[in-house]
Amino acid sequence: ADIISTVEFNHTGELLATGDKGGRVVIFQREQESKHQPHRRGEYNVYSTFQSHEPEFDYLKSLEIEEKINKIRWLPQQNAAYFLLSTNDKTVKLWKVSERDKRPEGYNLKDEDGRLRDPSMITMLRVPVLRPMDLMVEATPRRVFANAHTYHINSISVNSDYETYMSADDLRINLWNFEITNQSFNIVDIKPANMEELTEVITAAEFHPHHCNTFVYSSSKGTIRLCDMRTAALCDRHAKFFEEPEDPSNRSFFSEIISSISDVKFSHSGRYIMTRDYLTVKVWDLNMENRPIETYQVHDYLRSKLCSLYENDCIFDKFECVWNGSDSVIMTGSYNNFFRMFDRNTKRDVTLEASRENSKPRAVLKPRKVCVGGKRRKDEISVDSLDFSKKILHTAWHPSENIIAVAATNNLYIFQDKVN
Amino acid sequence: QDTQEKETVSPERAEEAKLKAKYPNLGQKPGGSDFLMKRLQKGQKYFDSGDYNMAKAKMKNKQLPSVGPDKNLVTGDHIPTPQDLPQRKSSLVASKLAG
Image (cartoon, rainbow over all chains, first blue to last red; front, side):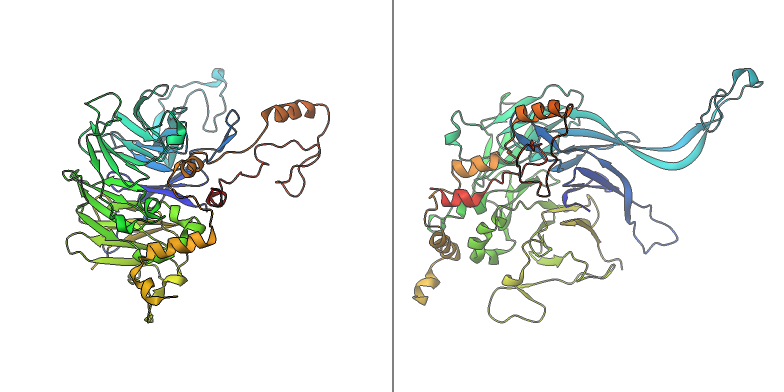
């Protein structure tokens, strides 16, 4: 199995898609809850697997284009088929996933094996009928949106109008119509005229969940800009600018690197945005630009390890963050296969671990604790024992239930609330 | 070392001091344009498409020597293909040491 690079539930939570480093997409489907086994909630089984992207080589620029799937975003379901967008560094594709569970039988001119029958031997006409067959799930690429990004795509986001979507790379954001693949509108361009003057890049972007004219994008300098597409065709001038003032006495070599925002997500309500930087998760009220309303420490103990984290490049790891369906709990990953949840109302937090060695299937997960020095209790793990190669960068939360999907390198874990 | 001094220094500053001790030539602005340029250039490989196409044309007439056990080592008549080339890793270590 390959390293999982993105995880996403669809809008009903019935399907869960994962993308991996090898360019494949695997979709899981929740099984129907059985009346005979009400205590066993629907489990997720493999529904469809397909190769979304292949590795490419751009000869003109001497650039290798990885097939790794950076993001998957689902479209809301409008008919029997499912649609999703998947993207690698350069190309976005729209995939249609549909079921076939009937096939026509009783042709006149060919027999059941498909061999043609001799027309002179046919004495009667019959009407072909549709008969049930074993379920077949097919994935077909319906649109390919290519050649619009010079730099590497980090985000895609479907607009609430369901007709357009955006794709963002390090310096530019483009707006697409789902029906049109040979054109896109550039809506943000932060490339300086002189590349020597480059000071920041776009790290993530997302459309507002309800207002089709509004989107946000985050930067490597820890800022978030909210833009309104009604004001201008090119949204280089933001409508709102979110930045927390820095304490100058705290400034160090690492300040800018650890302030780089790796993920930005609107709350389901559309009133808040959540950002993830290297050490914290922050919640911002759209109506207050000068500071976040909540800040949660994910793994503050890493502050005294920044030197080695810089040397092994871990300081550049891009963690994602997610809201639960009611926007009351937020979740993000950490190292050592740990992931953290913060309850915004009770202010309680928990650290859990996604690993086979430390938990049996269907067992309740035991909270973990990292010991920051001094005496280490029996269950605690010390900072120096953390495995930095086991990072949880991608997680997803079911839109309405307490079911979460956690990608731990090349393993996918699905956790559910304890059933009483 | 004066332990009292250590307590008043933030952990970040202490880490910065460690880094500077290891890499004395470290540039002042880590978020500056050199660092970002490296980030934008991920995936760069050096490859001569002219050589590659000429080799493909030659192959019709004679068998060119195939790649040796070490795929990354390009020697003799072996003409590199994109897959053979080692990825030119956008090495941040180099940029840390460069001014």
